[in-house]
Length: 159
Image (cartoon, rainbow, N blue to C red; front, side, top):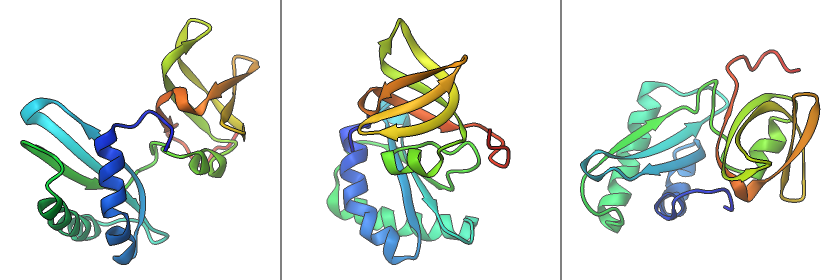
């Protein structure tokens, strides 16, 4: 994973991936937001049949068991398990490829041409760069610079 993702999220993803897959779900991505006693571990799951509250509860139970045994997150944190939803975050190059042609909002960790925020249509992926059509031009954004990426709300309206 070369997108800017916390090391804890990367470790958690490695630990829980097979457990989530064994339950019949796709592990869409993992976020860890460290905020002292208000830290959050957010796990996104998906499936062809959609995700229900019961699905989230099953995965939460499975993940809690794994994390209790591995004890990799010190201190208090909240575990959230959910569907990635319509404005799904994108975590991997494969996800950018899958949603080529869709609108996305990106925040970069390193500015390009003095900017860190971009919105536009995913025009493709070449090597480790996201091609983003915005403001009448195509921007080449290094995947490793992307701190956060989310699809726009209306997935049915591909540009």
